[in-house]
Length: 277
Image (cartoon, rainbow, N blue to C red; front, side, top):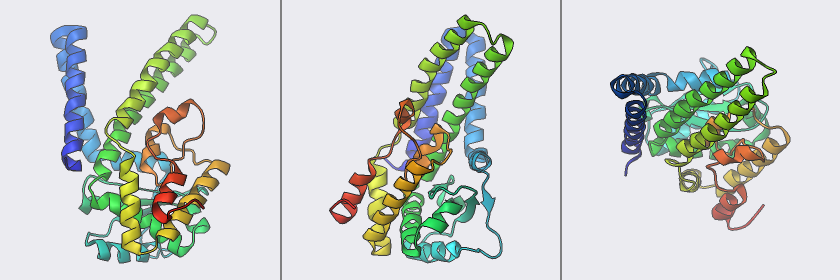
């Protein structure tokens, strides 16, 4: 099934779920509420998901002179892939990582952390950019962006409820317990919404395509290794519902790994060059 179809199917399933829950909970009024929620969520995902992510990470559009020469590398790769050149954004993070987004090949963007251009060599960064261009070429960015937007709304909804409960009666242990139970139910559901449509094989496939595009699998393998280890030492402060967007997962150890959709970095490296680094 093509990724564009999978994205719309994902939205249809979630809309059906919202309508069903609304109808069971409040009859006709619940159906109306579920329809309105589904409609607004679909419109938000289609029109504003990119802006949501740029706001989350303080993305800055590169216009005019590119001080790092990243745009030139992207242009070279896009000529090889025969796709329009995506917009380029930088985010102010010293942790090396990159992600892509956009509802179509023609409206795609690549977001690069400042740490990526400082830590990675030119060939390593080229391999990482080729990985993201592979996601764009395979029309995976819309699905990944939609998943992030929907689960992000749910995540902040839960956080808002916890904040309101704490503000209303911070010393009420019963309220805190209820909030904890609610969080314990919603967070696994949120993680399931992320993991269900996203498979780890998409990263293997993008790695393989990037290696073919650059003819330099070792450079990408070295980039993955560097990003993994720098990310452990200096974690990128990414909300868990955005982790699946990045080339290397920014998630740390603990319960937050429930949201993990990336295969192990060592396994990705082995598939690229046949051994560990």
